Length: 112
Length: 114
Image (cartoon, rainbow over all chains, first blue to last red; front, side, top):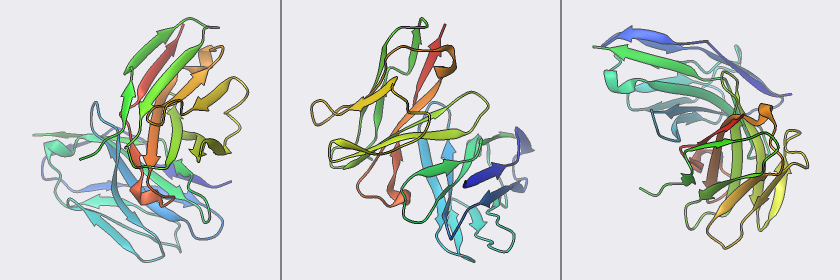
């Protein structure tokens, strides 16, 4: 079945460092891809999305590009802030369904 | 900004007891969901609910689980006889339509079964 694999955390960075969180997927057809973020004590929030190959999703300085050839959707940010500390989830929705399939989540800790 | 509200934030229960997890979705939303995350594992889909009936459920959602929208505002998940392996964070979500990017999640209920 469809699945999402994320790099294990925690990822620990200093402020202003470059961030990459890897995500790869397995799916039949052409899924939509998402990154969700969960700040401490809050629900899952949509961070960005991409619905077709070569699309780039972006929000709050984060970016991810839908790479069909490598079945990847890696999350990047050029300069992280302490306020970016959270758990990040990669997810997909397959064609003709509204069921999200998540990765395990990656905890990001940014220190000043 | 509208939000999905879940109560309680933390529930502790004895094995074999019934628990009800409560959610108040966003008021004009039509599609409702429960997901769960066992510690260290993936967030897993449990069930989707639309037009007062289950539209899809996972293999996890067996006869011990049920959902209900009793009064047009609350959306509940009931576990009839809890097992140790039901310990997890349970997330409620709601959506205006079936587009995944418009899904709103609650902050979760941490269920601990002792």
